[in-house]
Image 1 (cartoon, rainbow, N blue to C red):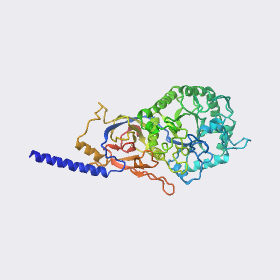
Image 2: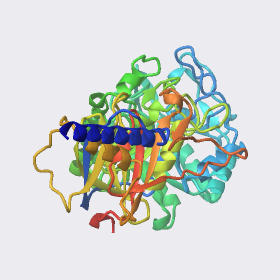
Image 3: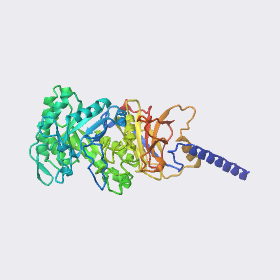
Length: 552
């Protein structure tokens, strides 16, 4: 009798195993058959820890001409402010998909741009010059080109940030040090022309990477602060109605606590509306360890100090100002070929978006919308790279209210929580840095649960428990449970982390024949089941009925 009972039990386990295999076989292609580890994310929905701007996602267009080359590569082509094909059919649709995408016009050469209004010299493009800043001569923005750019911006509903030449009139003293008073006449004429044409510029940014030690050139913080006061005066004079006045941003450089503090103290209350800084925390475009860095949680966490220190600087010296990242490409010198424009970079990009938002960063501008190896759009074809879809999903799903979370999970599982975008509920961003281990992530609300003692994550589940989890993350539910959540799982095509094709819930994201952005639909899953997160994958999880007082 005992033998017969054991046999029946063994047969039952075999049938259950076959059922699990069938379930796993029929799962979406982003699901892994490997037994996942357990993890828990507890969302604290009672209060917001920070808030972003409604238009947090931002992308840049730079000044670099085709001759901008590094590491024997010249990846810019015709993608600059001066030569980009503004009539390309994919470009307008790519911008419009965001509903008021913020676009920042600026970059290294902006401090050598003359505006062809009120000047007598001919309007010439940038050209190679061995003794010029960054190896280029002074360049020029013609007003016919400015008109065409604004035609695109008005057609697509873009919100414009324009980077002003902050070296105009200054002179090079020695090495990278520039001195002398800023000559504001050219900027004055340019802003006046812009207003006369009715072009809506949401913010003006003074200078690019002139702070601290500078990149190519640097200006003393006290001198910079006085010039910012003058520029503020120009904006107040030319924009007659107080409510029409755009924001003044500065300094658009790499964060240096002492220099930034001095800028705020010199310029004074209410002058600088947003302190802007740049983030290139992965190294140069020739770094062979870029992928390893992106998947290393300790390396990624280093950037958190910068966001935290920026927040503290504003709290101590300029509570009237906010923090913006006005340029962030991850990899400097054009981005990393076969890294910055592939799936693996979305892990870095989305992690930075989540990390920066926790420290009250209002806007995060990606270098670039198009141009170099780090463009959201391919420089040659204008087709979206994987990060374009990552940015679009963030923009559509993650609201401006940032929530605190607790995690019971290894460091390779990253998690961020926001109020849902313009709707009830919350959205979670989950990122798996491990290329071998998947996770079953249990989602909890801190209203109904306390962390207590950390459970033993290494404890192995029984066969039956593992089976239940294998089925539950596929969306199996009891007949009485009708509540659902939305899941958007992002993976690389064929598991190739350097693929230019991103999969959403197992389906390739590709433009329509007319350049239209694909519909990005979620899978619906029982709300009380764990979220399965495959190795080196990303998931946005929307919980419409999650009780979060901070989001109501």
